Length: 176
Image (cartoon, rainbow, N blue to C red; front, side, top):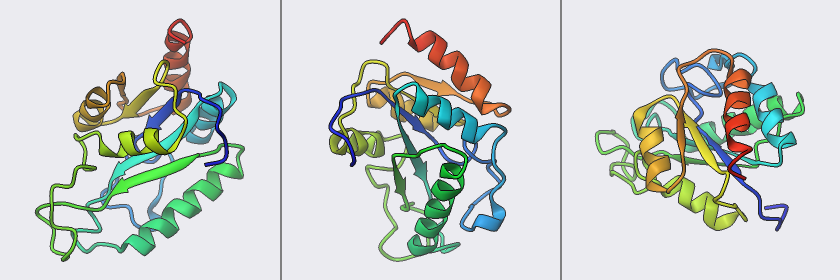
């Protein structure tokens, strides 16, 4: 954490929002960015929001990639976005899945969406102002996690992420 200033946060799902969901994305060579993803994140940064990623990553539990590989990918993604002036403040992911195959990850963990654990953990570790905060996801489980954390959730169907974020911010400005 680099600030103690309370401000709203945007909680963004990764696969299907920041990048296309091509199934179990564990390496940089498989990432295809959503159109204007960096511009959308930069817009949120400029509007005074914390920007967080929260993502179910059952590929770890299923043995498709390790947590080390996943963390390397998140570090690369943050670096690529930062090179375009877009800052991700923090990341939470849930590597668990009850139907996985890797010991130590075979549970329905309280961070796994639709549970709000990742959002609540980020709110605990960062000075998040609840008023004006929201989540964007591409699945009902993302929206359910937001609602369980008492935040509005917006369902993203793909396309221009920046245009989608601009519409949300226009609506949020009356709520802040």
